[in-house]
Length: 328
Image (cartoon, rainbow, N blue to C red; front, top):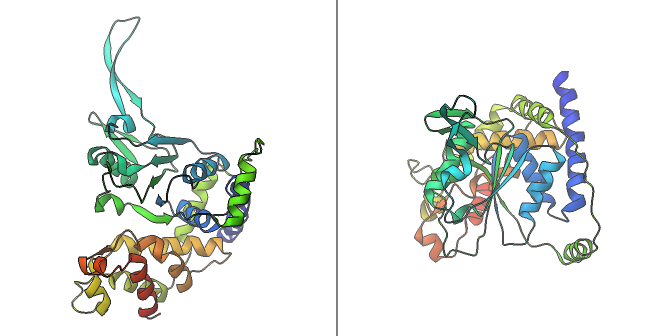
């Protein structure tokens, strides 16, 4: 009974959070929905979109509405790992004169981290995020420091600029639960954006939740029941992306894909489907919930081969074919 009440609470909270965010963000309904699914599933997100589509503003607004600590890190070619995690400095006690190392925390010690233009910094610095994203802790100078829950990394990257960028390695891409594509607004939405942002009016945002409540809802998501039938479908979907699968993969997969998604994709499909069910006012997960999060989970986990690129086949095309091919 407690879980049912909590599920109703989450549903009401989601509606209120969306209403507050939409005071600032015009349009982008699917992006906001995906972001909240990832948030309640404890999943990190990678936003892909050209500059000026309010990716940074969206994450900042969400942090304010959830009343969570927020840090924005601008990734640049000269950013060092210690600029993210923090560093030990030599501190002298003014009374005793004793010297000791003191740890100064970096911006990673927040609840929501915005890693802006993450592909503009070298792999060494990108790797500084890896331990934090996976283990929710950082190690500096031989000491390990836990990060305060809830801890989520929302990264952005620009899909059109490739000069001076460092593509994220597969190991790091796999740490992101979702890839969220942020598209241009419609004509009507852009008119509304132009009018509202040039009016000079300052919008006041209300805090809807706090860290304790977010953690409570994050704890509820794994408890949502999922049938073996739905779990089997999610796993078959992921396994069908692997061309090395003893001839069981569809022909188009063997023809176009070099490497498929790993087991983490199956976990994220099921977790995302559970969160999606709760946010749609259902207490059990369906195959439609799995389908609703499939593109977001698989798009950055499938590597196409040269033949697919030569034929102008996109990862989203392959995912679309998989959804029609894999039997429910």
